[in-house]
Amino acid sequence: MGINNRKKKEVFGIMFCPHCKGDFVYERMNGLSSGILRCSCYEYPILDDVIFLIKREDILHTVNLIKQGKIFDAWTLQVEVGFSYTHRIINRIKKYNWNFGSSLMMWLVIFLKRNRARKLRSLLPKGNLKNIFDFLSTKKWGSYVMKREKSASFIIGKTILKENMPNITKNKTIAEKFIVFDHMSGPGIYAKYIQEEIPNATVIAADQSFLNALLGKYFFSNKVVYVCFDANDAIPIKNNMLDLFINSDGFHYLKNKKNQEYCKNEIQRIMMSNSKIIFLHLHVKSGKNKGEGIARSKEEYKSLFNDFYPTIIDEQSEINKKYKHIESEGCSLSLIGEKIGENFTS
Image 1 (cartoon, one colour):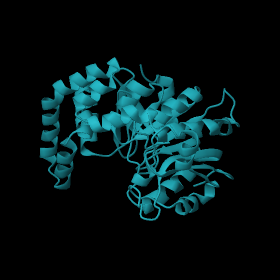
Image 2: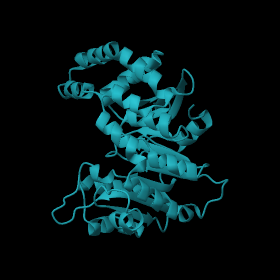
Image 3: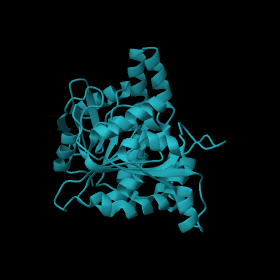
Image 4: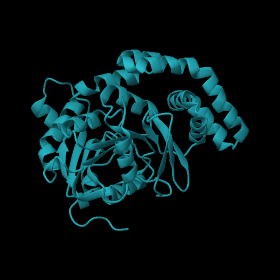
């Protein structure tokens, strides 16, 4: 199970460092599923085929563990950093620049959590999501993920994708490369669907959470390439590379409107001419409803993405028309656009 070496090299060829914009040199360690990516400013780990492109103290420690051949310890550390209170402690250590304490804390986390990580490692291949979430004590979030594919919002999102798929792929032959970036992907439920619809596509699912990536790999699609990165940074894709950009239920969680505008400019940079963008489940600011995160009104979304000639769909209306038997989850929009004109030049 996992991404083969040829596909890895293909993905590294279209990506760059989100911090220095430099190319990567890939060093494989202990088989295909782990390794190190080097650029001019940093070394990033690859664990269980998941590519990390985040700068943090624990990332440096993870790279050192991989170099020492301690792959399981590196895996243990990243599971705990992302999905317990450990990251709060590490962030506080980083804030006060306690370098010795930081290193000590990393080792303490690994020492205390090895058995827990072994248990998780044994549960992942068995394919029981409920057992995973019960073990991780994240039952509320787990219930949401397990029910996601049956929810009204996912069903209408999948319908919108399916209806637009002929238009998305119309200029491509089966033999041609087709590159998709699922931005703020969660465990990659939509990435899985796109990979099934376009089997020859290179689908990259990018999210900040390592556990989301692991769940995506083991429960949704092991053909998707999973990347951990901060969505407020530059999108780690070279200019004019993408055929399809998708974001589901995430854009409003960027830090502020300035970051949203930066993200929009980044999308413009990475898209090929005549490529498609699809935003699903954009939270709406309307009347007394301020929406979650940095939500905008329908008019603001349309203005922000005006360069993509957007079509905006009221998901609530679509649910009411097509899926009356399914309970709705609130008001949101889908936005479908196209990059028309010349490719980006720096």
